[in-house]
Length: 470
Image (tube, rainbow, N blue to C red; front, top):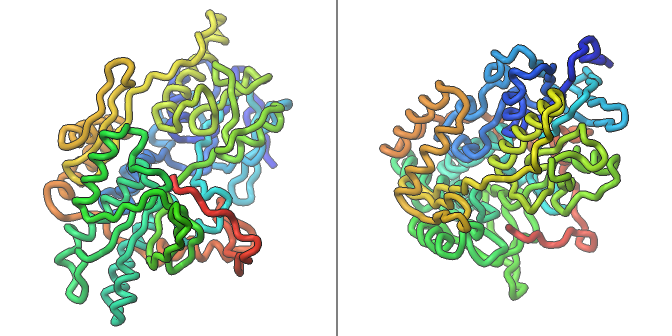
């Protein structure tokens, strides 16, 4: 075990996570009289809102996941460590992380925890084996392999029933991620691939979008939700609402409607976009602070985003619960900056900052090329909700603006031109390892990075409750 960060007399700040919250906190501390250590389980900063475009062959993973060291290479007061944090000691003010067989204990004077969230299967974690979420680069590359591989296998199949199953794609969850994913799978089948195969007609692929609520994109309001539903219908996507998932396996899933009727959907690819759960670190911190996490595993924080009883420890983004703030990237960015500014104010003995206030810039989702929905600014301050081509143009501009690095912005624009103005997609290379990686890791004796082991069976009398798709 190695202990790091003990030789300096300057204030030591440890940031856990290299996502939006961690990155913006680190940048805010660039000129501060502190030593910053960022610990992350990955070596990249991930622009998660565009993961679905990696999964459907529009963008490469490098364009939305630049190396953290490259992004922060000019920041002289910062050290980046690769490691999966498994313990935080609030009393001793230390963070313990592991990378393969190396364990490090890093002391801190101030702590910013921005470890984000993972896909939630609502107590049915074994669903992850056959219904990957879309939270990591690994998820996106595996889904790309499964989606494109499904068409290849359908081209080899001779049984029409099996061809139909192989070309059936199910997306669970009709929020922004689910809608975007379903839309891009439909466009891939009906536009990009329609002339590439001789034995199958890819335009006959079946794409289903399931949700437990009564509408799609319900957070955008009823008008935009209705417009989005019409656009999905024009794409040929089947939208099943008020639907519960009761089981998932390698050949499809079972669903139940409000009347109690159970239907079987035979499908080769199932994508889970139905829920999120905060990093397990939130529960570990909450236990030490004497507070309870909420149903999504988030820890309640003070108005200055600090842990109750521990003013030196900040929790930001998807891990915290405060004023019913949504789990979106803008919250993480703003809270990361706020936490860093608070630390600087304390060190310079300036007046404390007022409680954190979130500025809602709105949210957007693209359904297909030239079509998106937008919720720009809070309605109480004159915000707008709209859909169509103008929303799509705004979506392009916003996402280019928040991509990290000039090179990534240029290459992303070029790939978008190829995809949206033509039919091509430049990232259709897949490997066997990508497609079967999750299944292979499920056979390890101990779980790997949250991938569960495949159970031999789930007895009927102990089977989990149906999952509310939302």
